[in-house]
Amino acid sequence: KFGFAPMGIKGAAIATLIARGVEIVIVAFYICTKRKIPLCITEILRPGFSMAKTFMRYSTLILFNEFMWGLGQTMFTTILGHTATSADLLAAFAVMSNIDKMSTVTCYGLADATAIILGKSIGAKEEKEEIYRLGVCLLAVAVLLGGCISVVLAVLLPTFFRPLLFPMFSLNGYAFSAVTVMCIAYLIQMPCRSFNNSVITGVLRSGGDVPAAIAVDLIPLWLVAIPLTAFLALKLEAAVPVICIGIYCENVFKMPLGIIPVRSKKWINNITGN
Image 1: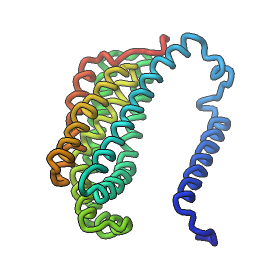
Image 2: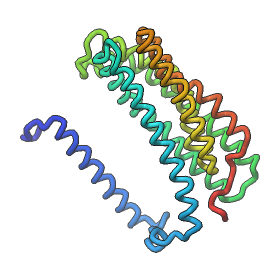
Image 3: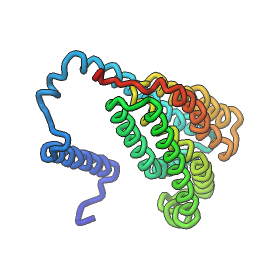
Image 4: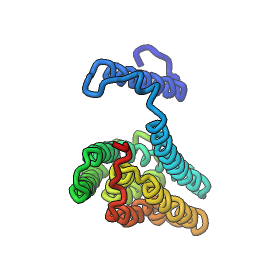
């Protein structure tokens, strides 16, 4: 376009790099010009031993959590890549992954907002019961948001995805039906997905209960979803709807597991030491 020769994958890589560069310029400009959160270079370079220790303690655990979660997600691709219909299933899963990224933007936004709101309340030393009720209210909003996304996806599937979006990826008949089934399974578990995001990223991490967040996030993934998907896809060579049970059961198991640490209220801790 605009006179440029097609660059293929190289062009996609360059475009991604340009986008990230523009992003960091915008963030830097905002930090340097907006005084709501003033930039203090000396505080960044000399945070103090206590603050640096606290930061390393929690950030290391969170990095481990995110690394293992990301590694777990790649396992689904690896499993599907070893099936008899790997090309079709991988194509369908790739399309579904993009729909997932677009669908969960609001869920992750709400989870981050939950962490900020609860963290502020904890730091302000509000009553423990008030903080707990606020957390429960925000989790209810997360379930409601997930339900709304499910409704939107259910409307888009027959009106936009199947007639317009899926054909853009040149999917054959089997891959086309596979991505349709995946989308249906995905929208069914969406309320659970939204709830789990807010529990892990929003509630538990707001008060520094990262070990509980790791347990909720990784146990259903590595001990249930991945082994079950491998068994269904590779051992039983099950149909796509059955394989979807293995892929998306992760969030169904996470939901009740996440309720336990939330109800314990052990996550309500002022980790700043103030």
